[in-house]
Image (tube, rainbow, N blue to C red; front, side, top):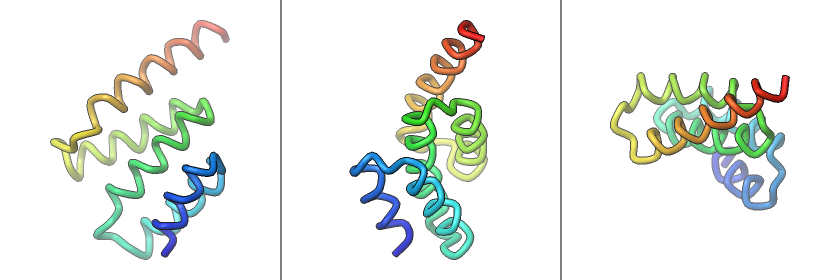
Length: 88
């Protein structure tokens, strides 16, 4: 249920709520951790939180190194991090 609500929240651009739901879903639904981590990663990227996104991507790489979205999301997070660091 939390994973589905997280999916709805990301579509509604309620990114913080999505992250919260994903954090809770990952603890109560261990089999779906990668799925909710992907959703949380996307929400963190939308919130311009690339460091948090990269932390989740490292966890995903450990659990499922061949995940179809891993490379593209990692590239996106690294680009956002670089942009953020240039502004700081």
